[in-house]
Length: 204
Figure 1 (cartoon, rainbow, N blue to C red):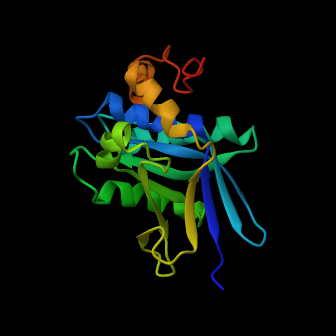
Figure 2: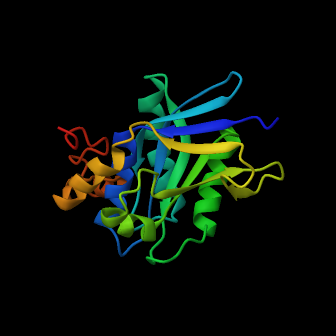
Figure 3: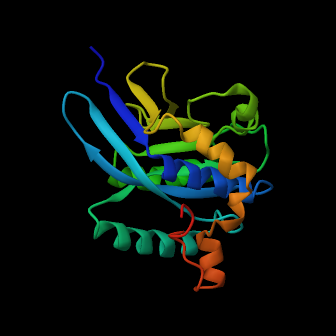
């Protein structure tokens, strides 16, 4: 029997990342996934929040290190940690997991073997208004036994679910009102520290 690992992402964490990618749709963007891991008969990785990182200096190490330190300090006090990484490619039809995404994912997986790596599926996101699909518009990658990134679902032992079934409906509402204009990422924060990378007003 295959041990099952379930990755679940809460609505606000999911929507925040998609809005970040939508705001900077001509750029590659990235972010980190925040949550916790629990064991049992089936392992569970619960993603409760997300932090948009960069849209201009996505491959530069110093800003990334600063961001990760600040994020870890904030969430560790809440009993949470970084459990994965999100990436959206620059080109609409590019579903290739590139070097930058793999390298940052590798860094996170050193500390958490169950780390998730999400890649935005732009085609699925674009089809969402007419498809009425309740499944996530991201592809989930995890490390396999050979320590290579492998897309989930091929062996049936790993699943990604949306915590709230209505998440894509809410996402479409946010997209139609151009709510992405309100997203602040670490690029914005490093340019102007008065801009809050936690996005506390986004869902109010």
